[in-house]
Image (cartoon, rainbow, N blue to C red):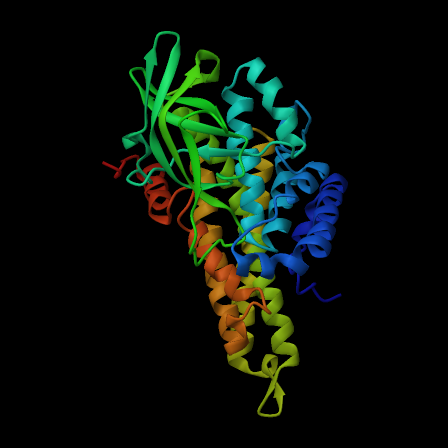
Length: 387
């Protein structure tokens, strides 16, 4: 039997029955409820808030976390869900990643029992959205240089600063905000509506348009001691959350690559030029072959890292390997697929240019390609080149 052109190395044959169930459930939901609408959402530059309840009903929010209404699935199952969502659009996977791997994970890993009990069940159900305030206008790859400050005032904390490029910012019922204190960087839970706290939508984006992005402004925001995440001091807290999100990304982009490859394969098989399908030309077949290899390698890498994570053996440097390699591969697949589709490739009728534009953002966020390259360089040589 010839290999399946859509799963050439039979990667999904390595999945357990439970993992295949997750794949089939999320893929069905994505194809039936998300795919028919995503081009309109992308063009309008928005994402319907009612999607939160649907994601919650499916158990997608914080699905790899245990307790507090979370599904408690394996890391591989979470990765598969990210893959199927990003096969539709990176913005949809970002919505789930920020909620579960950044905001919910921060509370689950570093929060108090009272904070977990108050927020996690509502967030898992999609009844409350969270966001993650780390990046600032002048502090991206170097979060240690953040300017947001939190100072003690009696028994309270007072926060001042600005966070930038915050996914879900204007939708959030609670923001996980990281700030400098006298004792190092600390995390704070800032409920929406707290005096002095505001979220302003960022418009005119040319990428990740089916996603809500905001600027968070904190002007004398007063919080009680109970708002502090007690388990996190220093960069260890926020960086652990980023590592969780990067794991979802390295799976998600494999889905984006798969979607672009599938679009190019289908188009080249039906579009005729010079009296034959595009797929019959040698140069086109080389492009198809290159994409086929990249997509299958990305899926193999994602599955391998997922198995390591489930065995509690996955290291942050290995996550950097996956994020760097798979995003780069997915972006190259998207660009190649666009050339196969020609002028049709730049329209929203096909997913390719939308994925290509989105992947330019994914290449940058949760650690730029350069940062991950330096992480791998330091891991291989034992010498840090960051400073």
